[in-house]
Image 1 (cartoon, helix red, strand yellow):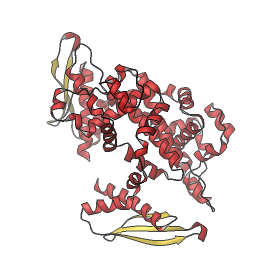
Image 2 (image 1 turned 90 degrees about the horizontal axis):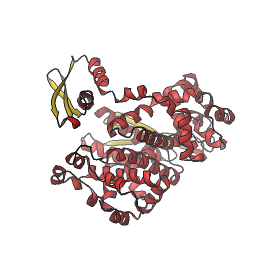
Image 3 (image 1 turned 180 degrees about the vertical axis):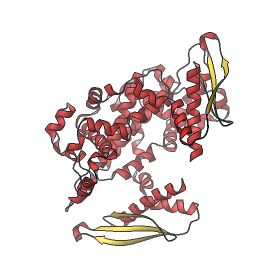
Length: 231
Length: 231
């Protein structure tokens, strides 16, 4: 781990060498170098960093989308704080170069494995939080991460119709049908009620201020039921 | 919702009436009172509060148990930030008195339902975070919640042997057997290797600095496999 290089790629003034050293130490390396005392690996920092990310990303989405419902916020957060996304951020910041790995992991390509990179990203966030606190995390994410979270990126996470379509196709279960079954309320406060059906079975229903919104809600409920049935 | 009473039971100087009003408004009430504009319910605050709790509890456990491994920290956090625990905290603070509920929910005992109380606790934390920030949350938890988190409470969460025993008994699957199968390393750095077996099948193995620790690790692995097999 090279603190100067790490400071450069992250745009941060990092001080505590041993803390960041730990963030980039995979458990396989710690096990290999084990003497009388175990070398600290990054797993505890990863535990902390994961929670720091959950909060800062939640807060960001909460402020950015003041009208968005809890369900969509949760889906968006999961889209940001997930292995593929965190691994991508880690790659952009060239975190792979700094990881201390055991020989076995190195030989089997551990340095490029998404799960390992995502863990290192979380551990780095944990270390940064311990050294500089929540404001520094917010500044770092606003500089390097949040600008990437554009509307289309997030739309994927909330597009329940596409997700349901994909799930149904994978199982070759026939065609989904959407129906608007009711329209309620006065003109200035219309509520549409939609249902989604699959092979004669109602998968879900939903309401919304537009047909599209009602269908998305119905699809979200359908997606839940579909997952439940597969368990 | 009575802000003065709420301030008294929580020991906090709360200011933003409409924010805490929202935290104690269940969606059933918001739906019932719906006019031209929807009344804000507590679901978005719950989303935020959940993440605030995850971080503050993680940080507390991280500092309090400087040697504890990530797996045990995660299990302990889940023991604290879970529906039964949060509902208990909400009851202690008499949060039920402040909730605004729809008539249907009220009639079916919603005011005492653990899931609803847990949600309200999270929403309150979300509101407090927005008004006063992370330090205030830490102070509140240190005054009212953390003193309850004693060793025996947490031990439950990390006692994998008891949990595995319970799971196996429920399914009437016979007796668990633990074996120490290897002892490695020099005297000052002993590593024990334990295995746990059930009806001729190895469920898990684990290592540790004591036999007990190795058995707990083996049980934790066994518990994972056991849950996987049940899916």
